[in-house]
Length: 322
Image 1 (tube, rainbow, N blue to C red):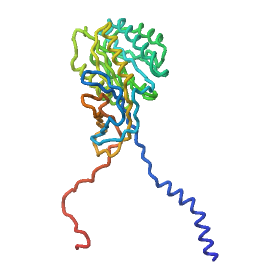
Image 2: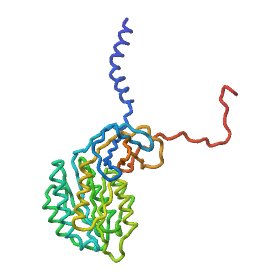
Image 3: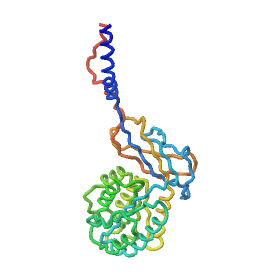
Image 4: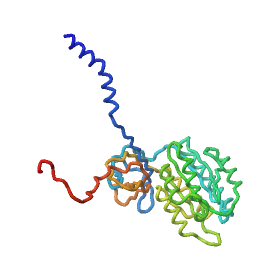
């Protein structure tokens, strides 16, 4: 009887320890929410903002995913980094660009989230933060009027550093890049700029100012690089001349920002891949519509590794057959 009591007592003493050990054997895996900002347009370019969650399908690496977050015409705050090219060829256009930029900011802050804010960078052979994030239009206008042109165009550096500055901003993150030329002096590569933008969930809109007045003329390769940066992150590039056409370009970007869908999912069932970049595709089930969103993301999880292939050579029979 005494022995039985001792056993029961020991079990009572060790029960909490056993429970703790059981808890410690639970494995937890944190799967990052993939956020997609998307716009939907018809074949004629009209924005479509009345779609429901069930009309969207998301594929990650070819695998259908379950949508966990969905917002139509999302009102989450906007952080917009304005990147203004001040290279030698662009310098003569700065005064006229300033008016359009200020007009854009006025429309941006007049509607939408009260926490919407913008920052200002200039870039030539260097990248300079002219104004940190603010809602004070006069402050950005004052800095715009002091910009001076110089040689060189460090566009990739500007995208890289602006993306890093957006990393800890809440809500939606956008870069609006105003330029007339290609990159010539960046330290960071095109790939580094694109990867940083992806890692920060940045959407890039480019405004290509025409005509290009540099002696070398238009740089088609550079323009294609800008287009790839923009479309790869879910944005686009608009070619515009100064004046009303430039105003229209900014208005078009603003309409996109006011008509965005926010779609989020937790990646599941992804196949093994040697690449860190995961391709994403978003479809809608209405004919004649196209979804504009980023092409993918950089993830640390590469999926389950497949079994190692046989190395060949002699094999050993199962023991029970020997």
